[in-house]
Image 1 (tube, rainbow, N blue to C red):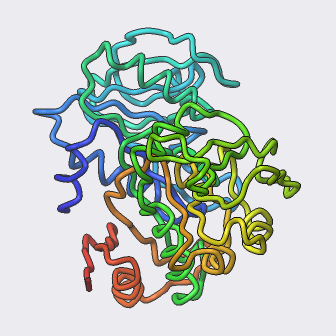
Image 2 (cartoon, one colour):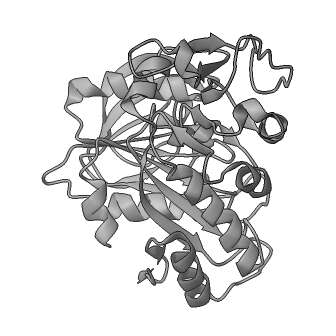
Length: 349
């Protein structure tokens, strides 16, 4: 598939499923089988546990993870002992999980393995930093249900999205829900000026006043702390704020917050900035009601969306028309869509 050629341009990639059983692990294996190990050093790990033969919730069969000779990996001490391949034990990391410390190894023969890597995004970042000593060219991280934070650009430079019938059994609903996620992933990066202003702010909600009389002379307005711990609170102190040019939300961006400020004239021409798309917890209705010709939502950082893959089959036996699903989704997101089981790429844009 062409996206493999695109993938190897990056140092890291996260594979994220929008729901259980959307084909994430199958996509993971597909990628691992096709990476050029003769020219690239590849490392793999997972957030949570991946590679089990049976889904612990649905009790359905799951694809196991298959590593090729020469691949580096990170997994817990417990699952390192259960591996079905020969490997070189490189080190036992200080990164700890409920299943023991993370073991770093190198596959000496092809074989199957359970991956249980760091349990948090920050832990993954630390593990990936440790792997630099082995001159790794590309790190692939297998995601887990509802762990979209894995796809944050603070963790990986690129991402692959897996969706399918398990996310919605209705093609139109599935396309709408997936297309909205893709739209959030592809939000514009804010200006360099805003990046420099907000990047080191780690908490609260901050505004840049758009009143020219209050300008600082550096092309931006006055930076105002709105004294809000997070966007979960709608008690915003706008004292001293005449017209908000830019609003930075350091944490989660929610429907309640958007709907509240939308009714305040101070925010009638405001750009909301969040760190990255994983901080956005908006419904399409709330997002669309806020964004217009004078208001928008942007990000400080973004990952490159490499591919969108679909699994047209759900665990309860529903099978969607793969070609129709892929074509409709491709048209909606203006990107190629892949059914990896069929080995097909669909593109209508």
